[in-house]
Image (cartoon, rainbow, N blue to C red; front, side, top):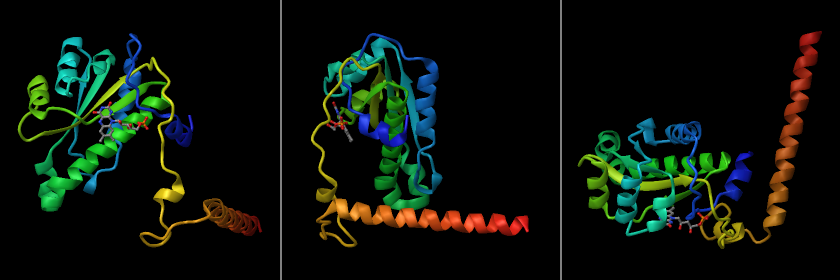
Length: 211
Ligand SMILES: Cc1cc2nc3c(=O)[nH]c(=O)nc-3n(C[C@H](O)[C@H](O)[C@H](O)COP(=O)(O)O)c2cc1C
């Protein structure tokens, strides 16, 4: 699947089929997480893979009783290690970058899931202490998110998403792009002409080599 197609198709799935997920697919999701960007490449994350029903029930309970989660055959709990990031980036690392790192890993996992025909949901609402107890998460680690994974038993509509012109500013904050179609065309033309120039240069280099 093309990446842009995957991004457009992805939805938060909260209804799952009672079908196990192939281990290879779960492996690919963890691999996608591992490959995410992280500040200074610190990779302070750990991923707890949970398949046991009993533990999934505890997680759903800890996630403010989001019982729909129990039916997802796989839960992946993302934890970060703020002090590890603090060692490189001080307070900003401890309070901000470690969270960003985990978020990047989560998004990679969601994209890897849809790419393989799986549904997923990012769950951020949880009672931290309950999650710590259920999964024996130590004090130096901070639970950031639970990702549910499984085959979707629903096909949710795309929720309302803001249009590009409502969220993008041009060159400075607040400067809106009024005619987004014209703007895109402009960039389209620029990119096309850059590609054309590149191809011509490449052709010339090849011709010179032949001489
Ligand atoms: C930080 C974060 C926390 C979230 N927490 C929850 C959650 O606890 N429960 C839930 O059902 N969905 C949760 N979601 C999913 C959002 O509700 C969902 O992404 C949003 O409604 C847009 O829908 P979409 O993912 O289909 O585009 C969370 C998403 C993010 C990014």
